[in-house]
Length: 212
Length: 212
DNA sequence: GTATGTGAAACGATTCACAGCT
DNA sequence: AGCTGTGAATCGTTTCACATAC
Image (tube, rainbow over all chains, first blue to last red; front, side, top):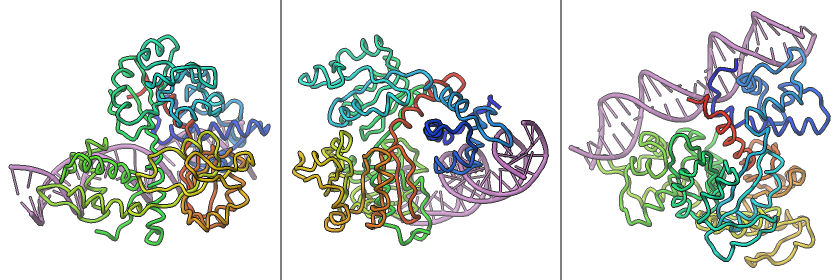
């Protein structure tokens, strides 16, 4: 059934399935079944089938899923069948690393703009992409069709810029600054906090014994 | 009650609460209530109280929580009251950026080793920390008491190194490589896949209308 | 009066198990 | 025979609402 609300958890697994399917494709597998996807994705077969069933009925009973076909469907649902334009705000070390990280272009995103407040950084970057001053934010976002913003500024700057991003019509933000950004309901923020991830690991180290 | 299994979801929120508490402390607030924590953390009061109640009874009814005191308790549960030693494997752009990211030292982690396969990179790094060759992995991990490994290598290298890490006694891995690492039950992996995060955002852009 | 701590209710996600299709 | 698609059962998490303590 196409008309059903797709669980948040399913949405988060779809990109993983897509990566596995692309890998299967590169291995020239014409067909894959739910067990195969589950093994590659570190999930289980029932979960994979249920997740995919939210998108539609793409499988062939007794056989499995056509790899090529399923890649098309999942990509379309994820909105990455055409490349989306992204901007990085904050060209420090992390921002710079992300800019030259090849993994985005392959997976549906093109970095089309870089911003920084530091006037010294406002110059041509390694990848031939100029670093624009933060003053030009609205203009550049509109001109280059930026849909997703990757924030790698210090926390205060992230908070301060938020209003301008929202009124520029940006609806998707990937935030690396360790602050909660509160945004209107139609804007989505995904938070990546590396210290949080490490602390979760640390919790398990600290409580290994008591766990069962 | 101290003797209860702490939900996974609670564990993931504790680091966020800790960050908020530290911020409250830096603002010289002696006491904070669950509503205050919830607002800073982007959660809700009932959730905060339930989460904290898994760790013990730290609040004062009618008043709230002593900030200093609660920081101590949460830090202890997270195992970050003493600094933990971490290593970064793969000193490419991302690894390099993480190495110089100040946010770790403040929040309970010290980077004590860097590794790379590239013999050209095996030299002294910006922070005065030498890049060790991957051959010395086991030795350096043991000598410097590395508990957490941050993997920023290409996917194939991550998979290949896993066995050596596990047999070196590493029990916590933060993996940036877009592969599922499968590890023994007593080893914990946290996966950070930036393309996955972007694709989740993209899903919402693509399905904004149908969502409710 | 005010805010915590917590059973109980409501909600959402996962797993089970099998009918239905190839 | 084999594997998908899916209701139903199970499990875990969140939210509610209030007794309890200050």
